[in-house]
Length: 139
Image (cartoon, rainbow, N blue to C red):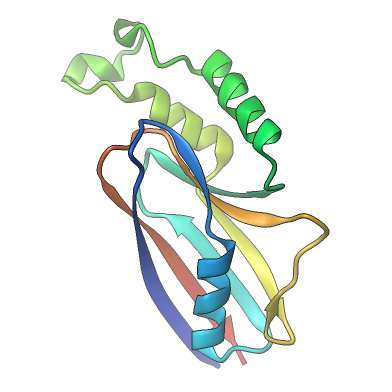
């Protein structure tokens, strides 16, 4: 069995944002040489997310509004976590909602997606470098 690991680094210039990382993961898959197996993609920070969905700007705007209703950034004082000197409690909650990782089957050397599926990195406390792990295993 082959095993491949790579870290992808991001610095989102805003507090929140979504980045389609499908092409980078496909490049990792090509580098791995795996033809049949699994690809794990996970955010290595507790205020960031990885999820699979459609690459459609209206949907991403809907995610932003929905997440802000569920876990509004402000007022910062509404969160116990922020009493420690942090201001990112909402980012931790948004990450929990959107998920830590995505696993995609690899078939014939390609990511085995359904129609319109793409992999996204979701940032909820940006303005600094963060990383994403790509781990691919298989034959």
